[in-house]
Image 1 (cartoon, rainbow, N blue to C red):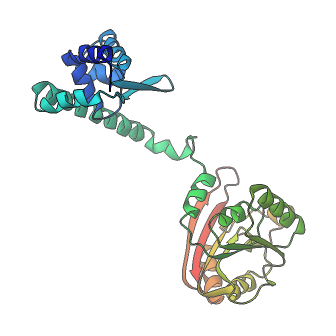
Image 2: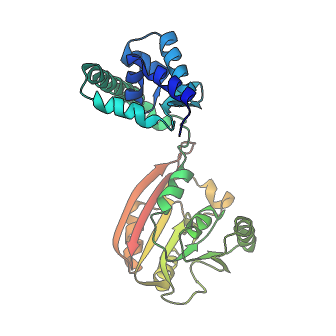
Image 3: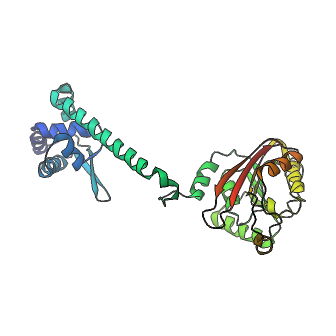
Length: 309
């Protein structure tokens, strides 16, 4: 129930064809004042006056987004009245012209967006873009991974282990370094993650039972193994039949300094060599591909390999 004064103000607000046209446009989608100026072919002051009046009677709301103000339909208890007016005049030439103008506005927006991406297409990969991080991409994609028993062999900084824990039923984290595992346990505790079991051990001689895991991940760990074939055979041993293996490692390179400084036992692997190792370890459906090139010198290239027991 609305009062007489409110009804009078509402009727005055509706007693103008431009304000009805604004309501009709806002019924299609949220628009800015500039959008309305373009579609209605009106100046800023006139559009602002009409919007302020409609806001006063609760027929229009606005919200701020940065420097822009977006307008949408309000929730006035008398909104049904203007809806009846709009319905009764839905075939009016004014409304039809406004819809055509709105479609032109939408097409201009699409054109501007296309023009932007066309303009930056050649250098898009090198641009610093908000939210465009490999960690963000990995966290998003990992949500598609199956809920299963994972083994992360050679955990390193533990970032991947913590990501896997978000989707896994359990994650067994294996590393030679007790300090690495202690750091991982501390970070997991801080995040409230309780499905990670840390195991100190050599990836070439895993202290884990046969057929105890559904997925094994070896991220930048294989080049540390003195006997990479044996490490892959151990990964196969702890996998269930049909279990999956993911290997992320380095493409073969000539940077000898990594042997002493980073304890690398191998200077990466060629695609055929990694594929042969996986097949020799008893895996099938082997796929090996180059995945990413480090932007910083010496521009190490990563390989990604997937296989099935």
